Length: 167
Image (cartoon, rainbow, N blue to C red; front, side, top):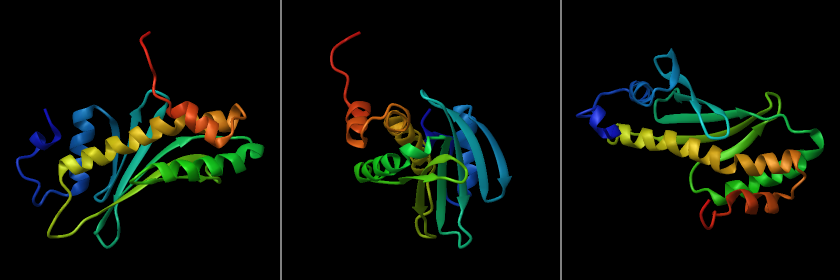
C-alpha cells in the first residue's frame, strides 16, 4: 500500500496526524508530544535514529530533525566539521550539523507549507525516508573521520563508494 492510499484526501488533515499514520503504517515507535509535535524512533542499518517533527509557531513550516548520538574525541572535531560541510555540499535538501552540547549528529529539514498547497502524505513520507537515507548514507563517513583518523574526503569517498561485483 502506498502512503497516498492511507488517505483518500489530504485536505483538512493536520500534517502531524499524517506523520502519526505513517509511523503506525511503518510500525515505528512514536510519541505524540503535542497537537503539533511528534517524536519517533526508526531502526536503520547502522543504528537507531530519533526523529521529531513539529509545526512552526506560524504554522507554515513542518520541521524535521533526525538525530543520532555521536561522541567523537575532541581532536577529531575539526575534521568532523569539515566532513559535515562537504556532506552538506553533496545533498540537495536538508543539512547536517553537530550539536556539541548534546553530542548529537543532526539532520534538519523544513518543509514550507501554504494554505493553497498543504503538505501531502506522500510528501511527508518522502521527507521521513529522505532523512533516514541521508543519515544512513553519511554515517560511515562520520565514523571514519571521528575514530579511524581518515581525512574528510577519503572518508566520504570510501563511505559513498558504489559496490562493484557480487558477494
